[in-house]
Length: 455
Image (cartoon, rainbow, N blue to C red; front, top):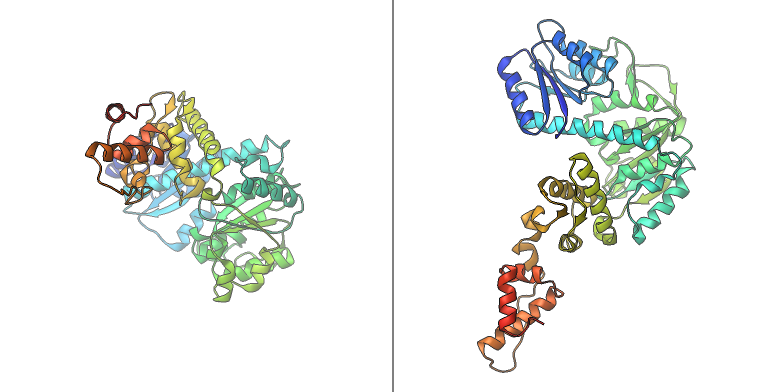
C-alpha cells in the first residue's frame, strides 16, 4: 500500500482509529474524518485511491457520499461499511459503483485485504489507460516472453484479435489469461472502446445477474432507478468473463441468449436491449468434463469455444523467467522508487529450477517482495523466501546414495569424492554447493583447498 492515499469516513471514534492504524501500518497515507460533510470536503480538495465509508453517519449517508465521490472522482474505489447489512443494500451500493460492501463488525485483516484489492483494481484501470496510449502496436506486444510456447500464443492472438469472434482462454491460475484477453481487445477494431472484466466466482447469482444485465426501476427493494449492466455498458467494446466455469446454470442460460440474439433483458425488465459486444471467456477448469457432469451447459460451451487459446504455465516456458523477472523488478523498482539495476545469476538459477505452482502471478509477487527487501542495486538470494533457496528445496534435488565404492578408502578420499560429486551436481556453482553442504562459502573454499579441489 506504499504511497496509497486512503480516506476513512466513520463516526465511531474507536472504529475510525483502528482502521486508520492498520492501514497506516501498511504504508498508506490515511485521512480519517468523523462525518460525511468532512469527507466531501476532503474529496473536493484531494485525490484519494480508496475511500472507506460507514453507511450511517449523523449528517449524510454512506450511499450519498458514494454518489458524491463517483461524480467527483470516478476512479476512486469506495468500500462501504455497515452494521445493517442486507442484500438490497448490497445490491444498491454495488449498483452505484461501490467496490465492496462489508458488514460490521468488520475484521481488520478483511478490511486490509479488501483495500489492497481495491488498490489493485485502480492500478489495473491506470494500466488500461496507459495501454490506450499505445494503440500503434499489436495486442500481443503487451505479453512479455520469447519462448516457443509464448511466440505461438502471440501469433494466435494477432491472428484472432481482428476477427471479432468469441474466444475461450484456458490456463492455470496465474498464467495471465486476463492479459491475453486485453491483448485480443487492443489488437481489435474495438480497441478504442471499453474493455470490461468480471470474475464470475466473486459474486453470488443475484449480484452477478445485476452486474451483468442491470435492472429496471423497482425491480427489487432499493432499485430506485434503472441501471445499465456491464454488458450494456460495454456496447461496441469487449467483455471478459473470468472463471466462467463458476457461473451458475441459470446465468449460463441468460449468457447463451445474449450470444445467440445479441440482446439482453435487464432484471425486472420486459423489453430486450440490443448489445454489440465481443465476449471473451476464461477458465482454469475442464469445461468439457463439466459438460459431461451436467454442471456446464453444452450449448454454451460450444458458443464460447469458437476459438480456444491455451496459455502455457510458467514451468513450460522457463526461458521466459529471466525476462519476466527483469520486467517485474523494473516495474516495482519504479513503483517503490529504488535504483535496482540487476538480478544475481544465482537468483535466476533458483527461479529457473522452481516449479511455480502460482505461475506468472507468483513470480510477480516474488519479485515485488525482492524489490521491497533489496537495499542495494542487485537482487540477491537473501531477498527470496527461505523455502525457495533453503535446504528443503536444494536437497530435494540430490539423490540419497550418490556414490558407490568398490573398495575401502580413507576418510579423506571419501570426503574428496563426495565434495567433487556435490560440485558436479551444483554445476560448479560454489554458492549452491555450499548451501547443499550446509556450509558458508569461505568454509567450502578452505575445505576444497585442503582436499586439492581448489582448481
